[in-house]
Image (tube, rainbow, N blue to C red; front, side, top):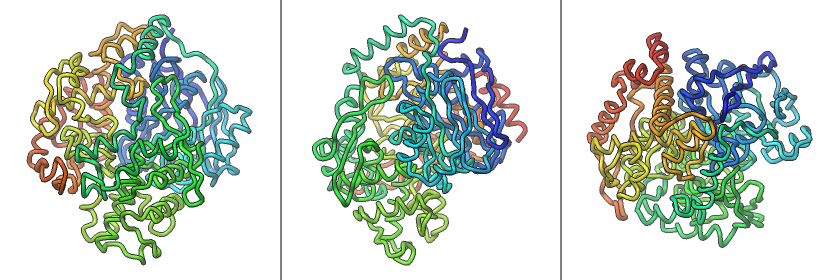
Length: 626
């Protein structure tokens, strides 16, 4: 008996219109745990090198971890992956809400989707049954109406729906996979992969309880967190949610402002958590099994900026991307931008950062009214920003270029525009400035998914003995200041980042601050494995290195492991003014990180010795075929 997993994958061939079940190897389930493994393993084994990310050969994967769908605090996460059309490399995006739990409760660990349909379809999963249904009548609908119709057709008002949205239909490279209308697998352009396959949606309803080896022990750990999370790092998210970071970063001098040109925003008070709660919040929201309840639902009864509660409310990343980054100080506008992105299926970070880039190009004269069809695309013009969101989703005018992300847009605009595109490997940097988090910048540079703030390190949490406590079970004992780029910081980044990736394997939410030992105990109780912190940490490094190997196979080498020019410029004012690492310092830290990870400096891939030590020598064999 397999515990924590069903041991089953649903294999869907859209070209042939066939669906079948595959049995998963129990040894592989333990070796790789789940999540990112399903994605990296499948891409390396099955996707031909050089495959077009928007072609039928690409493989779209919805997958879970052993904690996904368990009635435990933090068990609401799942992962979506493919070859990214935005970066050309590994795409692995995590999502909260209820979809992943529903998929697990329907009896499936993962769904592997290949090929492309000639006409639009959606995949309906109801417990152990699955079918492909026509979706011509859904094509072109915004997400809320699409979800409503699918639920009606399935006769399941609680069916959970993941869809590509209009942006994905139009192959916008910053399109996401939107779930439950207000949760997103937001990065790497996965909505465009879905749209290229003419797969409008995956809808699932499940009523089964995932298997558990020791339900009493799992429940004991889960109940402890439920009763004591206010004593952990989760407490801050239960009060102000992620929006608290607006004020935190403003005070630290690292609030990304006007396309990362500055670190503080004069109008920040208009877009804080307090402003949101006082002006537009109607209630709190949560994900499956979560007591933290970091989500907020907003509503704006305003003809100019109407916002419906069904679309949830903006997180910090969204408010930052459409607020201070674009010079906008009105929380209503940020909430409206959030709704538009959720309705169209656009990644709020990629969309907002790309618009901020275009605003800077406009103000520097690289774009003009003729390029924008008369739109005054300047910092602070919230109405122009909102209009551009729709144009990007529909690929109209300049939106046809911007929807491809800032790197491609900069290359097309020319005139030095590339120095204003704040991206790594083609993916836009989120609202965390590496100039006040040096280790974070190192993590962004080496990430196989491009700039990704989730599995990178946030130095502010590891500057004292209290913060470093979470890393002590991993063997790292020394706190370091934010502006350290020594070999010790590179080592800290390695330890902390690999542990964060364990959450991408297990299905646990990042905002659930279990200790490493509690995570190991929880995984052991659910799966029945006599596991340890070390085993899980190694599984994370195995998955991370497999993702890096995939990138190397696809031609993404060490030259892509860097930060954009803007992030080597000192901030002009604030507590961290005129202080930034040099390129030489950063390159030295990068070389240290490569050595610690045992990566080949010529290819950026893990060495054969490293892969064999991790028990995945077959990956080295794949690389040898390059």
